[in-house]
Image (cartoon, rainbow, N blue to C red; front, side, top):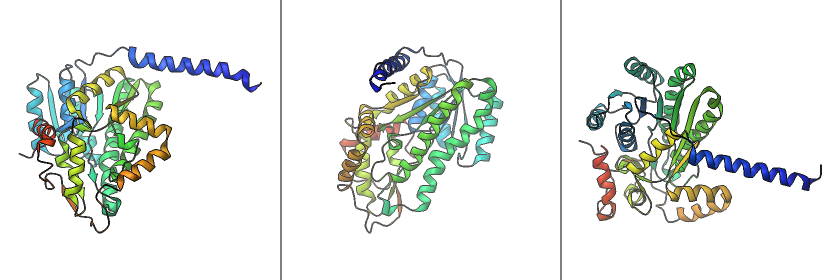
Length: 342
């Protein structure tokens, strides 16, 4: 067949597919999640706690899990005030046996888990010279394997019911790898691949998987981020400014509402913030140019030579800038969303 004769049919198919996807994105009916049971990992603070609020406002029953029992108790108190039924289960998600026990305990209380939100994770910042093998292993354990273990523990009952929703909170760092976040990005790239593959495989089983790709959000979690190297204060300063200024970040409550809406709609993907959307699209069109631009930006970040491999918490890396009016919104988020140690 002549090449020209294929152009019109392909164009028609392409336009039709695009219109179908656009229609599905904006006009797909949202399911009613009232009364459904939602398990949120890392639900004691930050984005996890904000999502618990948003799901509670939709009339959901909630299971929150995290390592710190005191943080979980404070979170439970906050969500209970909204009138929601909520239980807390301390769990180390990197331990597969603990994950299975947590899921069994949740089912014993509520019968089934209708929606799983894989949110738990850690983040560390520093140039490659400051990172160790253990940093990469820890990032994979907490950002990838934790989501994998929880998904595999919940999945059999969803398959049996032919119904369920799985929401994976990844990151723009899982689409575009930016300087000084290499261990984090490596794990998030893995989670994006796992999440997209799950959607492709589980759709025919009645299970809907949504991949959430957040940009920078004012969750208040910057104070619990790990900074690597002896230039950790400089590292923390740029990280905190980017993470808390309104021109670069979005309020976590707004992000949580978007995630709940995407869950109800059954969206394939949700990219949060205009900045993240633009970066993802630019990278998709010009991956080489994106890498060159990031190389240029990296030259203005704290150098890695001679920085060592020591680890420091964000709260232990504060400077006059990170405690100034410039980060007031981030400081407020830390207090509101249970990030502050009490």
